[in-house]
Image (cartoon, rainbow, N blue to C red):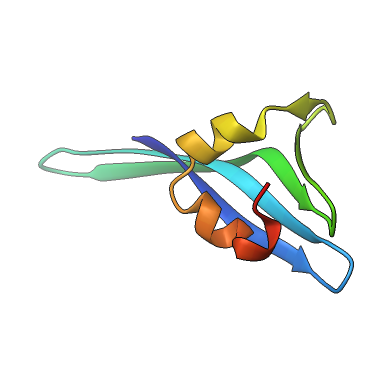
Length: 85
């Protein structure tokens, strides 16, 4: 199973940083044993400044913020009303 999540990682009076992470896990069990594998990988960082918001992938290239807003549950709530663009 794989999903996306957003977590605020920094916030001060100048700007906020939000990490967008891919979360995946697999598990299986048999009669004698079981296993669980999980992975969390940061795929983008959103910078919320006083005048603008932009998103960067992990190669520091600009990416479309609107696509992240559609794909990441709860992202609009984390960005908040002070940063609606």
